[in-house]
Length: 219
Image: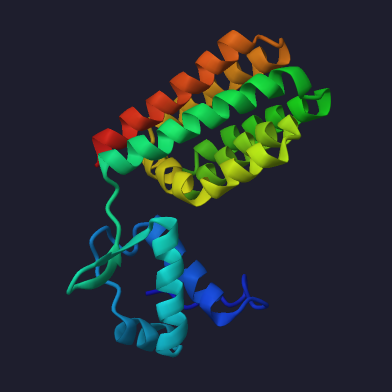
Protein backbone atom coordinates (compact mmCIF):
# COMPACT_ATOMS: atom_id res chain seq x y z
CA UNK A 1 0.00 0.00 0.00
CA UNK A 2 1.22 3.49 -0.82
CA UNK A 3 2.14 5.86 2.05
CA UNK A 4 -0.14 8.62 3.25
CA UNK A 5 -0.60 11.58 0.91
CA UNK A 6 1.02 13.87 3.48
CA UNK A 7 2.60 16.31 1.02
CA UNK A 8 -0.70 16.96 -0.76
CA UNK A 9 -2.80 17.28 2.41
CA UNK A 10 -0.30 18.38 5.08
CA UNK A 11 -2.63 20.98 6.61
CA UNK A 12 -5.68 18.69 6.88
CA UNK A 13 -6.76 16.65 9.92
CA UNK A 14 -5.25 13.15 9.94
CA UNK A 15 -8.62 11.50 9.23
CA UNK A 16 -8.90 13.57 6.02
CA UNK A 17 -5.40 12.54 4.96
CA UNK A 18 -6.27 8.86 5.56
CA UNK A 19 -9.56 9.37 3.71
CA UNK A 20 -7.82 10.92 0.70
CA UNK A 21 -5.23 8.13 0.66
CA UNK A 22 -7.77 5.31 0.80
CA UNK A 23 -10.08 7.04 -1.65
CA UNK A 24 -7.31 7.37 -4.22
CA UNK A 25 -6.42 3.70 -3.82
CA UNK A 26 -10.05 2.67 -4.33
CA UNK A 27 -10.52 4.85 -7.40
CA UNK A 28 -7.27 3.63 -8.94
CA UNK A 29 -8.12 0.01 -8.26
CA UNK A 30 -5.29 -0.57 -5.78
CA UNK A 31 -8.00 -1.51 -3.28
CA UNK A 32 -10.28 -3.86 -5.20
CA UNK A 33 -14.10 -4.06 -5.10
CA UNK A 34 -15.05 -6.46 -2.32
CA UNK A 35 -11.69 -6.07 -0.53
CA UNK A 36 -12.02 -5.84 3.26
CA UNK A 37 -10.79 -2.72 5.05
CA UNK A 38 -9.49 -3.91 8.42
CA UNK A 39 -8.58 -1.23 10.91
CA UNK A 40 -5.53 -2.90 12.48
CA UNK A 41 -3.69 -3.79 9.23
CA UNK A 42 -4.52 -0.38 7.76
CA UNK A 43 -3.28 1.47 10.84
CA UNK A 44 -0.04 -0.51 10.71
CA UNK A 45 0.44 0.03 6.97
CA UNK A 46 -0.30 3.77 7.11
CA UNK A 47 1.43 4.40 10.42
CA UNK A 48 -1.57 5.95 12.18
CA UNK A 49 -3.88 4.97 15.04
CA UNK A 50 -7.16 3.16 14.46
CA UNK A 51 -9.26 6.27 15.17
CA UNK A 52 -8.52 8.18 11.91
CA UNK A 53 -8.86 4.87 10.02
CA UNK A 54 -12.33 4.36 11.49
CA UNK A 55 -13.35 7.96 10.75
CA UNK A 56 -12.03 7.77 7.17
CA UNK A 57 -13.95 4.55 6.54
CA UNK A 58 -17.16 6.28 7.68
CA UNK A 59 -16.46 9.13 5.25
CA UNK A 60 -15.86 6.65 2.42
CA UNK A 61 -19.13 4.94 3.29
CA UNK A 62 -20.98 8.25 2.93
CA UNK A 63 -19.48 8.61 -0.56
CA UNK A 64 -20.63 5.15 -1.51
CA UNK A 65 -17.07 3.88 -2.02
CA UNK A 66 -17.26 1.58 1.02
CA UNK A 67 -20.09 -0.54 2.39
CA UNK A 68 -20.55 -2.07 5.84
CA UNK A 69 -21.39 -5.78 5.68
CA UNK A 70 -22.99 -7.38 8.77
CA UNK A 71 -20.51 -9.62 10.64
CA UNK A 72 -17.83 -8.85 8.04
CA UNK A 73 -17.15 -5.15 8.51
CA UNK A 74 -16.10 -2.57 5.92
CA UNK A 75 -15.25 -3.47 2.36
CA UNK A 76 -14.76 -1.64 -0.92
CA UNK A 77 -18.11 -1.25 -2.68
CA UNK A 78 -18.67 -2.98 -5.98
CA UNK A 79 -19.82 -0.97 -8.98
CA UNK A 80 -23.27 -2.43 -9.52
CA UNK A 81 -25.50 -1.80 -12.49
CA UNK A 82 -28.21 -0.40 -10.19
CA UNK A 83 -25.82 2.10 -8.57
CA UNK A 84 -24.54 3.08 -12.01
CA UNK A 85 -28.03 3.66 -13.40
CA UNK A 86 -29.17 5.60 -10.33
CA UNK A 87 -26.18 7.95 -10.35
CA UNK A 88 -26.13 8.58 -14.09
CA UNK A 89 -29.92 9.02 -14.24
CA UNK A 90 -29.57 11.92 -11.81
CA UNK A 91 -26.51 13.20 -13.67
CA UNK A 92 -28.42 13.14 -16.94
CA UNK A 93 -31.26 15.27 -15.55
CA UNK A 94 -28.97 17.82 -13.88
CA UNK A 95 -26.52 18.14 -16.78
CA UNK A 96 -29.33 18.61 -19.30
CA UNK A 97 -30.53 21.53 -17.19
CA UNK A 98 -26.99 22.89 -16.96
CA UNK A 99 -26.59 22.65 -20.74
CA UNK A 100 -29.87 24.47 -21.35
CA UNK A 101 -28.73 27.36 -19.17
CA UNK A 102 -25.18 27.34 -20.54
CA UNK A 103 -26.47 27.65 -24.11
CA UNK A 104 -27.91 31.01 -23.10
CA UNK A 105 -25.36 32.29 -20.58
CA UNK A 106 -21.98 30.96 -21.64
CA UNK A 107 -19.50 33.70 -22.53
CA UNK A 108 -16.90 33.70 -25.29
CA UNK A 109 -14.22 33.40 -22.61
CA UNK A 110 -15.87 30.29 -21.21
CA UNK A 111 -16.22 28.80 -24.69
CA UNK A 112 -12.50 29.40 -25.14
CA UNK A 113 -11.84 27.59 -21.86
CA UNK A 114 -13.74 24.58 -23.21
CA UNK A 115 -11.61 24.59 -26.37
CA UNK A 116 -8.44 24.86 -24.28
CA UNK A 117 -9.64 21.95 -22.18
CA UNK A 118 -10.15 19.83 -25.30
CA UNK A 119 -6.67 20.75 -26.54
CA UNK A 120 -5.20 19.67 -23.20
CA UNK A 121 -7.20 16.43 -23.30
CA UNK A 122 -6.00 15.69 -26.84
CA UNK A 123 -2.38 16.29 -25.85
CA UNK A 124 -2.67 13.73 -23.04
CA UNK A 125 -4.42 10.93 -24.99
CA UNK A 126 -1.13 9.43 -26.15
CA UNK A 127 -0.05 8.96 -22.51
CA UNK A 128 -2.88 6.45 -21.93
CA UNK A 129 -3.30 7.86 -18.43
CA UNK A 130 -6.94 7.31 -17.43
CA UNK A 131 -6.60 9.25 -14.19
CA UNK A 132 -5.18 12.34 -15.90
CA UNK A 133 -7.87 12.22 -18.60
CA UNK A 134 -10.59 11.83 -15.96
CA UNK A 135 -9.41 15.01 -14.20
CA UNK A 136 -9.43 16.96 -17.49
CA UNK A 137 -12.86 15.58 -18.37
CA UNK A 138 -14.20 16.62 -14.97
CA UNK A 139 -12.85 20.16 -15.54
CA UNK A 140 -14.66 20.29 -18.91
CA UNK A 141 -18.01 19.70 -17.25
CA UNK A 142 -17.17 22.06 -14.38
CA UNK A 143 -16.70 24.92 -16.87
CA UNK A 144 -20.21 24.30 -18.17
CA UNK A 145 -21.64 24.14 -14.63
CA UNK A 146 -19.96 27.42 -13.66
CA UNK A 147 -21.41 29.06 -16.76
CA UNK A 148 -24.93 28.50 -15.41
CA UNK A 149 -24.21 30.90 -12.52
CA UNK A 150 -26.74 28.84 -10.54
CA UNK A 151 -25.25 28.12 -7.12
CA UNK A 152 -27.89 25.55 -6.17
CA UNK A 153 -27.44 23.57 -9.38
CA UNK A 154 -23.65 23.70 -9.04
CA UNK A 155 -23.96 22.47 -5.44
CA UNK A 156 -26.17 19.52 -6.46
CA UNK A 157 -23.73 18.52 -9.19
CA UNK A 158 -20.86 18.93 -6.73
CA UNK A 159 -22.53 16.47 -4.36
CA UNK A 160 -22.33 13.86 -7.13
CA UNK A 161 -18.71 14.64 -7.98
CA UNK A 162 -16.95 11.81 -6.16
CA UNK A 163 -19.38 9.09 -7.22
CA UNK A 164 -19.28 10.28 -10.83
CA UNK A 165 -15.48 10.45 -10.77
CA UNK A 166 -15.36 6.72 -10.06
CA UNK A 167 -17.57 6.00 -13.09
CA UNK A 168 -15.70 8.53 -15.23
CA UNK A 169 -12.39 6.91 -14.39
CA UNK A 170 -13.75 3.42 -14.96
CA UNK A 171 -15.00 4.30 -18.45
CA UNK A 172 -11.66 5.91 -19.37
CA UNK A 173 -9.77 2.75 -18.48
CA UNK A 174 -11.07 1.57 -21.87
CA UNK A 175 -8.63 3.31 -24.21
CA UNK A 176 -11.06 2.96 -27.12
CA UNK A 177 -13.19 5.67 -25.46
CA UNK A 178 -10.51 8.37 -25.41
CA UNK A 179 -10.92 9.70 -28.95
CA UNK A 180 -14.69 9.22 -28.83
CA UNK A 181 -15.03 11.40 -25.74
CA UNK A 182 -13.00 14.16 -27.37
CA UNK A 183 -15.26 14.13 -30.44
CA UNK A 184 -18.36 14.27 -28.25
CA UNK A 185 -16.98 17.25 -26.34
CA UNK A 186 -16.18 19.17 -29.53
CA UNK A 187 -19.67 18.61 -30.94
CA UNK A 188 -21.17 19.76 -27.64
CA UNK A 189 -19.07 22.94 -27.64
CA UNK A 190 -20.22 23.73 -31.17
CA UNK A 191 -23.90 23.45 -30.23
CA UNK A 192 -23.48 25.46 -27.03
CA UNK A 193 -21.64 28.18 -28.92
CA UNK A 194 -24.46 28.32 -31.48
CA UNK A 195 -27.13 28.37 -28.75
CA UNK A 196 -28.61 25.15 -30.14
CA UNK A 197 -30.30 23.96 -26.95
CA UNK A 198 -32.12 20.99 -28.48
CA UNK A 199 -29.01 19.49 -30.08
CA UNK A 200 -26.79 20.27 -27.09
CA UNK A 201 -29.10 18.46 -24.68
CA UNK A 202 -29.20 15.51 -27.09
CA UNK A 203 -25.40 15.58 -27.11
CA UNK A 204 -25.10 15.36 -23.34
CA UNK A 205 -27.72 12.60 -23.12
CA UNK A 206 -25.85 10.56 -25.73
CA UNK A 207 -22.53 11.30 -23.98
CA UNK A 208 -23.85 9.89 -20.69
CA UNK A 209 -25.55 6.92 -22.37
CA UNK A 210 -22.27 6.00 -24.05
CA UNK A 211 -20.52 6.11 -20.68
CA UNK A 212 -23.13 3.78 -19.17
CA UNK A 213 -22.68 1.32 -22.04
CA UNK A 214 -18.90 1.26 -21.61
CA UNK A 215 -19.05 0.75 -17.85
CA UNK A 216 -21.65 -2.02 -18.15
CA UNK A 217 -19.19 -3.94 -20.31
CA UNK A 218 -16.49 -3.54 -17.67
CA UNK A 219 -18.63 -4.66 -14.69
